[in-house]
Length: 163
Image 1: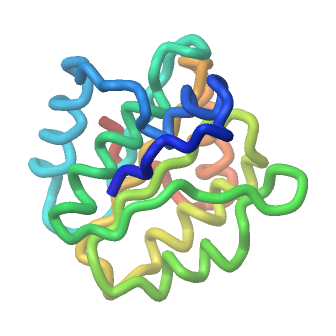
Image 2: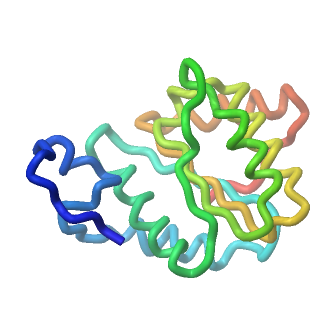
């Protein structure tokens, strides 16, 4: 699962949250998010927003949460960036075509194109085969989600559950 450390890797490469080279001390938020996923309704889409200053461990929290749910059979992944920070269209289509539970992370969501995020949410809501889709957005800005909800309402997607 974890890759062995190579002598060619720099310290900054080892410190990347997705590398998992540094031992992890799980904060209470990890258990809270795990409970949120497990206790959410058995179908549909649920959204959580994790916010905090840069470097506080938002991405690593998502990585560790993803490992937990991947080990329980979920499809887990970080939403890749497309051109100029947009959501990769192939990824959005993959969400729609998925056949199992999905846990998706959008890291630094506030730096993404809001219309693209709304399109991702639309794709998640259209998934008829997925029993559960959980979206976790990370951002350093605690007020960011309100702008997305306004845009969702403007495009008549409708706002949904927020943890």
